[in-house]
Length: 125
Image (cartoon, rainbow, N blue to C red):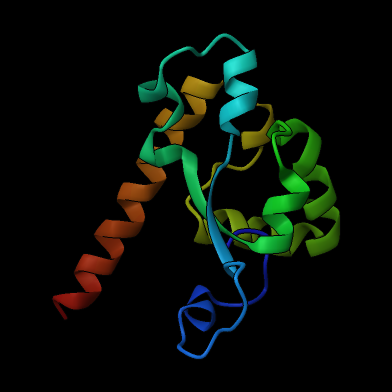
């Protein structure tokens, strides 16, 4: 899960309690941020490549802030090696927080396809 050291599978285990979900699907470039940047189309804002899973507290912390505002805090928290690993595991290009939105989507799609290809090859072993 992005910006977490816990595997996503832990959050899908049965037995959770309370009304708040432990994980949330969140826009990497938040939807309201993009709207204020002039992205009027839900089709543009809701691209699959713009989604990730976050734990509840991280989701609340990020809110509608652009990546340029929030990534630095998590990069510092994780350390450089942890940040690079989080980017690799979540198919995020290094430095995505300073990319143009459409460039980010294009680069992330390439990385996502690489992860899918790697998983498929492993299944074929």
